[in-house]
Amino acid sequence: MTYSYIRDGAEIYRRSFAIIRAEANLGRFSPEQEPVAVRVIHASGQVDAAADLLFSPDFVGAARRALESGAPILCDAKMIAGGITRARLPANNEVICTLADPAVPGLAAEIGNTRSAAALGLWKEHIAGAVVAIGNAPTALFHLLELFDAGWPLPAAIIGMPVGFVGAAESKEALIAFGRIPFLVARGRRGGSAMTVAAINALASTKE
Amino acid sequence: MTYSYIRDGAEIYRRSFAIIRAEANLGRFSPEQEPVAVRVIHASGQVDAAADLLFSPDFVGAARRALESGAPILCDAKMIAGGITRARLPANNEVICTLADPAVPGLAAEIGNTRSAAALGLWKEHIAGAVVAIGNAPTALFHLLELFDAGWPLPAAIIGMPVGFVGAAESKEALIAFGRIPFLVARGRRGGSAMTVAAINALASTKE
Image 1: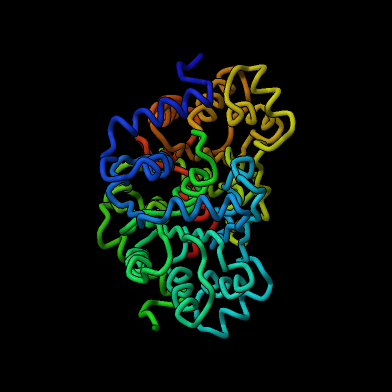
Image 2: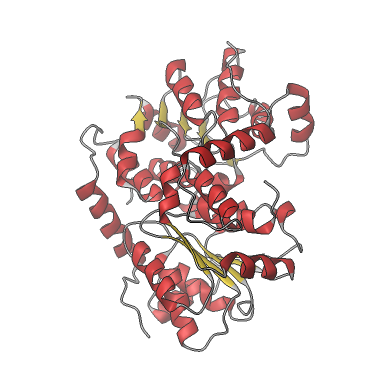
């Protein structure tokens, strides 16, 4: 049997984004935020994810300028690093995930935190002006805020989209309250690597 | 400032699963399906994802037996292949994603379908008795059903969780209607690599 379905990838994207723009409540996003929101909603498969998204007013501009000037992208999870479409990146930007570094289990024991949090201790030389994408571990986002409070230089922009039931919502509220870094968060429990990758891919290029 | 949050990964998992078991409606799942459903819900961040999940009665047993006997895991997206926790796999199972194969763009043009669909044409030697994880492209799931109809050998079990607004829901209903392969699907638009990886990780080991 032959199934009836659209087989053209570009047409699937066009129709998907048209459905999202027809169904989702996008009215509170600025013209530069809207395409980022659309891509994140696309990755979530749910138009009501629009209600979770909060952009600081300076986020899209800060993240785009950083990427265009060659800033690295720092990710808390390998799935995020793996999912970023390299061909969309404007300056062949380096994509860094330190979770698999052999030093991480020892660092985690030393600081009494998860491996996801401890892995961020290896970001120090990369963090100034970087674009940060936290899409898995609430502990990573909390620990990064602690490192900033301890005097680390700040990144250009941060995507805070850890997912889950313990600490995820709280870590994202802490990022909003921190207030010193342009941010995009998905408030509440929803988030994850796919939504985070979609945000990076949308910021990397205005091509839809 | 020091934030108050749980820093022990195992304790975060325990509390997360306890919250899901308290809040989600899991009553229609069998005892062997329930831990798989819990992990998929965990990855989605939303307890109402329980309502989307449909297991064929033979799915968990068929998938577990295949993995224990060394079956490969065939994935439509690199993010899925990258996210599977190798240490949980019972037989050091091979994890295969053919999307980046240099033959794929040519195959896609030849069959007039997406690269995600065309990449599955390279699965033929691996498909018999495999565990299939489709968590990204509806076109991949539709095309795989077409290949089975054209006489391909069948896998042991299939996870059908493509995400999105064009074809995703329809492709999963087509898998359910196909009826000749044990399946787990997330009906509707929701799905994606994180939920798909969670299903594989749950099937790979009963450890929570």
